[in-house]
Length: 404
Ligand SMILES: O=C(O)[C@@H](O)[C@H](O)[C@H](O)CO
Ligand SMILES: [Mg+2]
Image 1: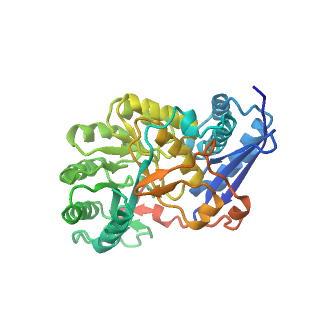
Image 2: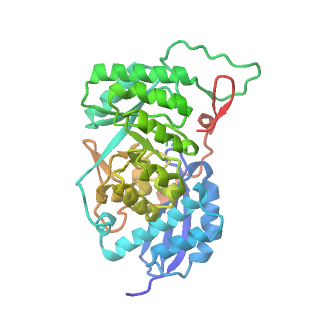
Image 3: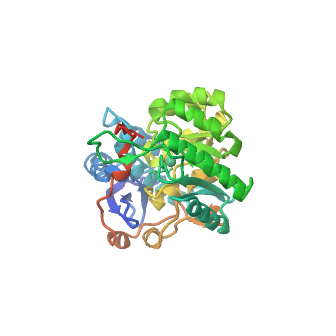
C-alpha cells in the first residue's frame, strides 16, 4: 500500500445560518486527495480552532493517513488531561476527515466500508415549536404534509411556560436577567399539549419531547409518569449528565422510552446507563465525543444492550457532520432515529452533496468517503458571527441559575 501522508490541516469557521460551524480540512501528499470533518462546538468555536491549529496540526503533519485508530489514540493522549467538548471536537474534525480520505482511497462511501446498508433511507425527526398551541399544530401539519412521521413537540422555549396553568412567577427583588421558567407550569403545559396533539392528530404520529435537562430528578420522574398515556417515541435528555444515575429509578418506575446523551463527552458517562439498560436511545453529538472512531464503538456497544442510536442533529452541527453520522445511521443495525434540522440554501452551496430528505427519509450521496464537499469561497461569504448566549442562562423563579 502506497504511503500517503498528511501535508496540511486547515480550519474554517463559517456561519451560513448565523450559527458558527467549524470545518477541518486534511490535505495529503497526493495533490488532489483531501478529507473534511466537522469540529463544530459553536459556543467555543475559536478554542476548537486553536486546539487544531496550535496542537494537533504540528503533531500530525507528515504522519500516514492510513492508521486512523492510532492517530485518534495519539491525539487523545497528547494532552494528558483529555476529553471535553473543545478537545473532542478538534479530534473529530481530523478523525472525520481521515475517514473521508479512507473512503476516497477505497472508492467506497463510508457506510459501505462500515459493513454496508442496513436500510435504504434514514428516518428523521423534526422539531415543531411555537408559543401557542395553534402555532405548534400548524408546524406539525406542515411537517406531516412534507411526509415527516416523527415530530418533537414544544410549547415555548426549552422549559417554556407558554400555555400552562397560571402559576405566577414571582421573582425576588433585584433578580438578574435570564431565561426564567417554572418547572411545574412547564410540566403541566407539556402534558396538556400532548393531550391536545393526540386528540387532533390521532395515534399514528410518533411524538417526542426534549426536557433539555431542565428538571430535577424527582420532577422528571413525575413528568415521565404523567406522559405515559400519550405513548411518546421517546422523552429526550430528561436529566443532566451529572444525574444520569437516576435513570435507574425512572426506568424502574415508568414505561416512557428514554433518550439521553447530547451533552455526553466520555465513555465514563454512558457505560453504566447502557450496560444496565436504563435508557433506550443514545443521542450523543458525534463531534462532541471525538468523531466517527468513538461513535462507531459506542453504536456497537449500544447494540449489545438493545439501545438504539438517535444522534444529535441540531443546526449547530455542520452538514459534513450530519452526513458523516448518517453513514453510521445507514450501516448500524441498532439505528433508531436521526434528528434533522434542515439545510438552508447557503449551506447547500457551501457543502455540495448535502444529504437530501424526501418523505421523512434522509438519503446521503453515494460518492466515496463522506460524500460531501466544502466550497471555501462560498464559506468565506458567511464569516464568524457573535452569537446570543441568552437562552443558555436558565433560571428558576427565585433567580437560581439552572445548568442544563
Ligand atoms: O436536541 C436538540 O436539538 C437541542 O437540544 C439542541 O441541541 C440545543 O438546543 C442546542 O443546539
Ligand atoms: Mg436536545
